[in-house]
Length: 277
Figure 1 (spheres, rainbow, N blue to C red):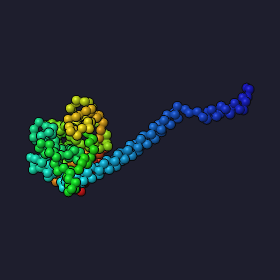
Figure 2: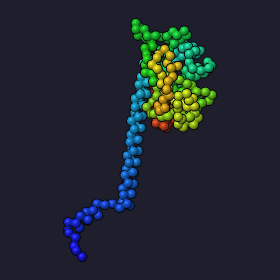
Figure 3: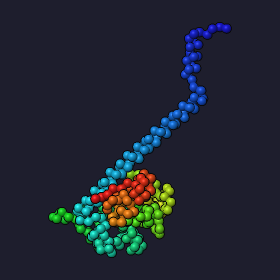
Figure 4: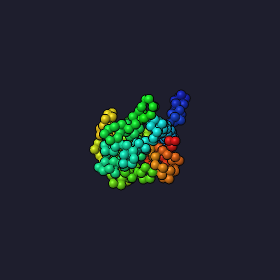
């Protein structure tokens, strides 16, 4: 048999060494998938941690706004003269959403409602409550927070920290002026908490948001397009009983974010809590 040239035999040898069997390729692909999974999980954890840090930073900003509100006016939001007129304050609830006085009051007291940090509270007849007086250096000097959106919340969540913003007992509290946390999530189906696809005109979701026109004269009625993917609202608690239901609220007022999972856990699990004082 004729000998093959040495260079050809060497070339065949290099070809055999450079090739992979199907089994070897499958092993390599499996290893790469495993590495990708580990890296992906690590990045996801890093993203959640970074987002949680951002949420805490935003909550400190909201807490500072609440403190500034009190420093300027002498009251925390929804307390004293900034409480409802039916509760000894001066706030006129007639323009709030709801078909009854009780519903309008519950809308006002919703922990998701940060309206008084966003727009000037008004008394009967549209009179501003404690407008800023530069001579005394006292009065409402907002807005303390920028207007972000209108959120619909279940009526089960109470000012003392009990309940759940997803659960709907009788009706939803709609168009609550609030601030969303950075954990982007879809709206939730009432009473189950599962994702709910929100579209314009749909009223079957809670914790859904609406954009609003930048019009301070009618910020509660200029509802526009539904926001399909947005954060959960920061919750503001000022009821002294909240320390019983939300142990992480060691003082009042306090702020809560439902965290990465988007579920209200009364301050436990991945909820984030910041005490204002």
